[in-house]
Structure formats: structure tokens, C-alpha cells
Image (cartoon, rainbow, N blue to C red):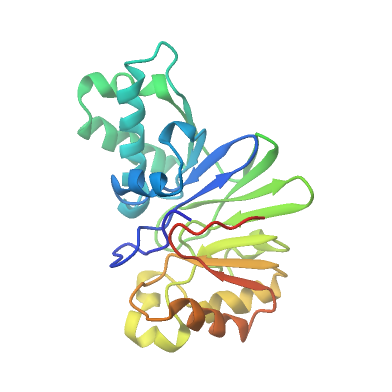
Length: 261
């Protein structure tokens, strides 16, 4: 977990994480800026180690780190006869935004080399592809705010990861998470703090909201992130609220935490 904060974090990095497998390393979102390099260093992951990247949507706290990463790959490609290539997966809206930001902010000579370092896969949902030893099924997470891409990743030995971007588990996307081994999704604050943090105004949900639906969908492990970071003893308090409604394991993710499947 490279970052677990929301759009305006005070003591954490924006929500993003790496999935490291024996056959690939995928970055899922990249946060809001060049801080992505600091977070990668902290978990001993060089940018060139990343083989795949999925960008859930085009909000600044998810896409701008990707722009910095791509700029870095273009920069180092000038010193290599075989540039490092990165497979990037995004929906149509996000792919367009990514290319436009690069066009407007890169030197022309850098932008002209963009296709030397990335393979941009514009995802129409639903669709599936094989990445390393996994099958990845992409879907629209049903956000009421912005077009947003999620996926279900099926590993060998009946292990699965469902990711909803920064969206919470809702009635609109819950079927995608049914029987998930690990569900990674947003939970902006505790239900008991909803009047303080106003999650519904931001198109987000609370820990209680997510936990109730995860229980109905037979989710086995729940990883919650993209939350406010002003609550003291947050991990204990969030887990206590979730456990009232959800029987599986609850992981309140923190920056730089490693979760092993």
C-alpha cells in the first residue's frame, strides 16, 4: 500500500498500491504527484520494476503520479537502446486525460517519444485480459461522480483481488465483489463521524456502509483505504466499526503496509 489517503491528505499519501507477483508488478493508481517516487523507494521498488499500471479514473489524486512516472520512463529511455515499456490500462475518459496532460506538460521531444515507453490499453468494460499468471477482468465500478475502472484479478490457488478504485462498495457494484478473497475499496470515515467528514457529499461511503454490503457479498477479507487521516487511533476505531457488521478479516490499510495473499 503506497498510499491510503483521500484527495487532500494531511499525513498520508494519496491512495495507490503495488501488486507484486512472480510474473509481474502492477501499480494501481499513482497518487497526485512526484511523491510517487518517494513511496516506491520506501518499499524498495524502482520505477523500472513496474511492468503494468491501471489508472482507475482521471482525478488529480490518482492520475498525476502516473504522469510523473511516465515522464521518468521517457527520460531514462534516451539512454537505452531498448527502452523500458509499461502497459497502461485506463478507460476512455482517463486515457484521453492522461495523453492530454502529457501533451500539455512534457517537452515536445519527450511527448514524441511517449509511444516508445508505454502501451496504452483503452478499456471498454466489461473485458478480460491475461497479465502474467492471472486473469484480470475489468469493469465499470458504477461511480456517480466520474467514469471509473475497477478489476477482479484471479490468481492461481483460488485467490482473488477485487479493486474498486476509490469507490466504496455499493449496491451498484456489489455483484463484482461477490465471493472476493480480498476486496480493496474506499471507506471515507466511520459512520459515527459522518457529520464531521460529510462523505456522502463527496460521493463516498462510510466504514459501516461498506461492511454491511461486504457481509452480504460473502467477501472474505476487506482492505479499506481512501479515507480521512485526521482520526487518532484510526486503525483500531475503524476496525471496531467494521467488525460490528462484517465477519471476515478487516484490514485498515496504512501507508507502506505490505499485505500478503
